Image (cartoon, rainbow, N blue to C red; front, side, top):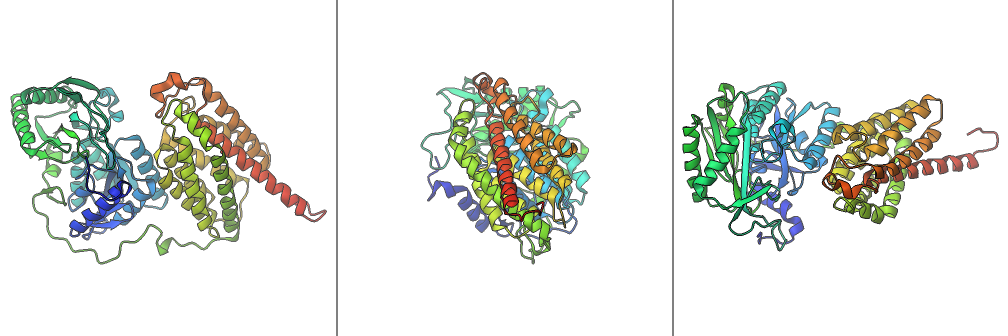
Length: 582
């Protein structure tokens, strides 16, 4: 149990502040996480890692020469928001592009993906390599669906060393992908962890039992087994990893025994000795192993074994020097401290000269955001109840948090271009709502703003481009398809109807009305579907007969925007002088 805190809600931020205070020679605080406090050579690739807090030394403890350039730090076991990732990456960027790397968890994929889209749109070339080392989370033929646990370290270390050696973004990305493919991990837990302020662990393991295949976010394992002896545990972990080895595996491996929080070092060393003997008996040579706490889960009682099958190239970068607060290898030449201030993402160079048309459209966007907020507030409770049927019941409150923040941020940006209004609103939506809906709506709002831009005039083609960008951001990030029972089942009928009406010569307001009706109709029909994506998927049968809450909320929002546009046009027509034709 975590005992040292004032307010549990502030735990992650205050712990990060203290970490920076204790490690100023390595890291500097930025909004959203940390970056190196030492100078980075111009043109060097910036490896930006991250995830939820509670895993120290991952992720902030791995920032420094020879490893990561920055770390985005979310709340306890929660993905950092897209805006946090964006700001950390922008501060870490040295002109050579950015490689984002993190464990393959849904929230991280969405928020890091949203940040990547934004960075690329601003001309900062950004790539992603997710870590998928946990063999318990999916079969080998679905390796891309596996989650990341202690194998984060091997991918981060080799990618960071490649960046330090001066490889370009293509080279760093290639090595990260290669390392991830050749890394396998498996963990066990003897009891669960307890979040700050909570009275009970997230799960319990029965006395005399061990949970196999745990996750690092407090997830229990996939099966329980009688508590083994040390020799039996070593045999279990080694045999399962060797059975899952990559096709091109050689005979030289990095072995990492990782403690998850409360297993003492003496126990880890005892286990490592037995593991090393088993690996040798299997004909493998262990190269520069690690044994200790490297990716933890607060106070979880458990451990994991990671194996990285090396080749000559990977061994070179694994052995290369690194110097971070929590991981050191070899000897790095000293680096000069940064002399320039770390700036916020909204630098002076980003200031635009707003056109009159873009400012007017920006004001209309502010008014529309207020309408979106109102319709979400009206239906918050029913959306929550609908989500609770086969999910966690937070869709209504999540949408409320997101749209409240978006409307406020859009209003604060009023007077600037529609692109800047929607960028501010989308980022605020993502950060405040969190979760899947926050990432998707935030990304889509930003994408629509980027499509509208800062032009001298706007027409129906610009409206079409905004709708395409909005839908494209949702489908690209979420990877959902029609029939998966998600918001996409209402979104794509909306998009197709809108574009078809415009192609037929209809004005934007008419196209919007037809599209909104199509969205609401499609949302209602999701009651006939079984969910194939998201948290509702395991409870597919319970979901039958009930519409998807994401599709329903999208339909409600589309209808409210259409009604608002119609009322504006009606008011303008009434106010226009006779014969004006407005």
